[in-house]
Image 1 (cartoon, rainbow, N blue to C red):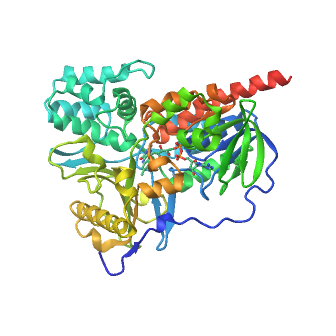
Image 2 (image 1 turned 180 degrees about the vertical axis):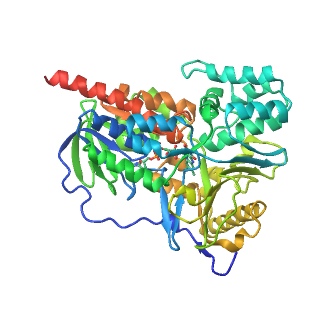
Image 3 (image 1 turned 120 degrees about the vertical axis):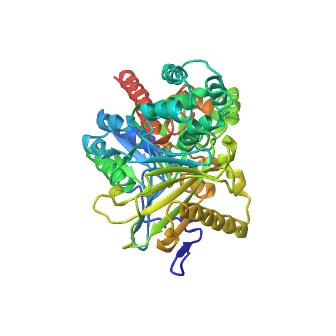
Amino acid sequence: MTRETKYYKGSTDGKQPLSNDPLKGVADDYDLIVIGSGLAGLTAANVIARAGKRVLLLEQHYNYGGMATWFKRPGGHVFDISLHGFPIGMKKTCRKYWNQEIADSIVQLDGVRFSNPQFDFETTFDREDFTNKLVNHFGIPQETVDEFFSHLRAMNFYDDNHETTGELFERFFPGRNDVHRLLMEPISYANGSSLDDEAITYGIVFSNFMSKGVYTFAGGTDVLIKKMKQELVKNGVDLRSRVQVDRIVVENGRAVGVEAVGRRIGAGAVLSNASVHATAFKLVGEEHFDADWLQGLRDVRVNNSSTQVYLGIRAGETLPWVTDLLFTSTRETFDSDSLCDLHGESRTFSFYYPKTRPGSDRYTVVSSMNAHHDDWKDLTDEEYEEAKTRLAEDSIASLERYVPGITEKIDHIEVATPRTFEFYTQHPAGASFGTKFEGLPYSMNLHEQVPGLYHAGSVGIIMSGWLGAANYGVIQANKVDAWLHSLQEVNA
Ligand SMILES: Cc1cc2nc3c(=O)[nH]c(=O)nc-3n(C[C@H](O)[C@H](O)[C@H](O)COP(=O)(O)OP(=O)(O)OC[C@H]3O[C@@H](n4cnc5c(N)ncnc54)[C@H](O)[C@@H]3O)c2cc1C
């Protein structure tokens, strides 16, 4: 680390002060109030507004986007949090539910690389290349590979299939720890799933990527969210940031509005993009749910969290081409659980070159790891700072193996932990990908407990990530639309 290197201690944990009245000019009543501006909340708001309804969107943070976010730092650095890669399906979703301009900025990554003691190669991360690697590099018979892909493609979200991903891999590739690593490691980073989760949570996400590889948004997250905001405003959505929603108002068993900043605002329907646990337990209140249902929700496990190390390259410096996305590990063999270790040996590097933000000449690198909130939550301030420093140092040491001398080019280092993600999004335990699989029915059927109340947001592993969250926003918006129509008919 050079002397000029500025190490930001805990700076990601500070909130900006509140400005005047963030609800100034807000009406007394809307068709729909959306709580939270994650990709699910934003997409649901846009779909309902385009259907001609009056929509209010309330976000507690000063930025919109939830975990689809970015931050700027002195020295001209812009860091993306969750822009590492998503499946091609995001292009269609953006074209249909946002606009052509947003869809057109979605481009394929040029490089994805694996580098670990078991294998080291570039891949286009699609079915053709994975088939080639499995057959020619790993020596798996072509028929087995074809059967594996056919099996995954036939997987149905509605199937009652309790096979785990680990069992699925053993069935097709028994004893092949190296193959399990190839297939699992990237998906664990993409949706937090492990070998112990239901195979369906693996199959759907893996198949989505295998169709055409890994994509990104050219321009960066800041441009994406700016364009989404413009579209929302064009469609008449009343957008408000820095508004913490304190309560969802339920009257006569029905969601009829929210309370925020000491004001009550009415609505025909409320869609919460907050975590499903916070929605039921904090915003609505236990008295409005069946006891059995509540107990079931209490038992729903939240998914793991993440750590990230943001490395800013000094203005004027350049990086050689390495790849866009590097799955790297020094661990001899693959162990699914170890991906969440406090000081683990496996991490993903996202390299951001000037092409990330066309017109810019800047470079950044973000190192991401899966993490357990429990490992971080009880650390003293001193232990916390030490753990963050070690994480940064380990990440830079690992990066030096691929870009010798990079340490001298870094002039900004900053670390985010599960505590950071919890603070910014209010997700219990800083969950990066919502809940485990069993959370899905609780999210989908919230309106059966409290009519007029809907949830959309990372849940059940499947409905997570940029694509899953945006698509889930559409699914839930369609239910909201039907509900609003039924209200109109009653009132007619
Ligand atoms: C480190 C990291 C890396 C990731 N990388 C990728 C990736 O490369 N590709 C990918 O596809 N996905 C990635 N993801 C996952 C992806 O970012 C998320 O799944 C997705 O953005 C979640 O969207 P969401 O709609 O569930 O809402 P969230 O992003 O969770 O947003 C919820 C919003 O609700 C707001 N809110 C909560 N409570 C209230 C309240 N009471 N009042 C007002 N507002 C409230 C929060 O402030 C927040 O803005 C990553 C996630 C993390 C953490």
